[in-house]
Length: 424
Image (cartoon, rainbow, N blue to C red; front, side, top):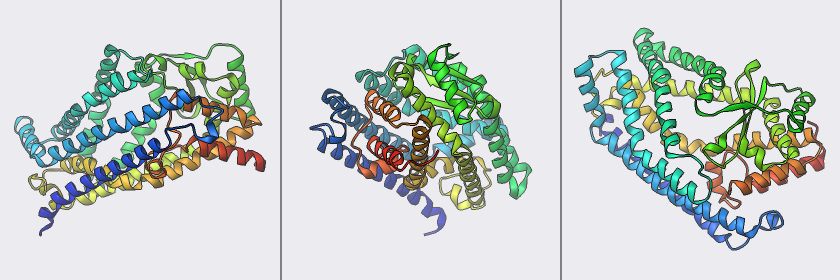
């Protein structure tokens, strides 16, 4: 069998195998959760009410069932799009009307990106207005939900489309080194967006207000002074207008760095617990996790562009899906994006293992910065309870899907750190 004939069944195979593996992980997790559904795990019987635990189990199982349908549908859509002839036909159609140019090829990529998101919209809607609503998390309105998507599309047109045009043009301008130039362009764009996003983009979706004067603000500012961490400001985001889930994060770089707290988080936690959560975020900064993640993202992106460059030199790759010879870089980019997830899926445990190590380190730093572990543990328990987080995930499912350790793992690690008296 020639390579051009081998590629379609190989591509279908890796997509189907990924779906089968994902389905198996989901079933394992479901059976594991059901096996522990009868009573609260021993470690949390004094902290988690039985009724809350039952809601947690119900929410976890509902998400697993929903996820199976959603993943199955997205796999069917992906296979259908790859093997229906839609991609080469649509490229020929748009070229017949607009000609062969970087602008045309970028428009083709951009348009297909929109088309391929449409089949998933009903699942997004159902997840928000049925599943999340059922468990009391949804607070958004139909108007706001659709407005978010329109704004997202507008940003993609303004920012994403010109970037696609530039990448396609670099392929024609820079010869064999186009992928290095494209990678550098993408990295520069991402760094610029890290600075501009909290200033320009985030306010398009949420209202950000400075944390009001008072004991909480004083406590958090003192934490910053004590740990040698300073941010431009502490902001409160109106996350409650979309969901009752809560979060806290840093955004921006350098002197543009901001601390953002969800209003739901402030409502759910006490001041010492909020300080512990912020200390955890400071721990990520102090332990150098941000530059490490940026470096990993840069290396991953570089490897991706290198792979695209290699595939672009292999005509059998695009011809196997019906594209004409010398059809440019756009088909290779599209096929790589659609297929690469099925490959990187198998690397998820390694990436999550690294991420969980960072979380353990940030937790340890927070406990040391606070001088005690109870505030952090109290915050983690409340957040787990309020968000109905799964207390009993299957280890394999956790390895593939959990970038954070489980509550039990985090508590054990924090207490072990405290007992050893490790320095911050």
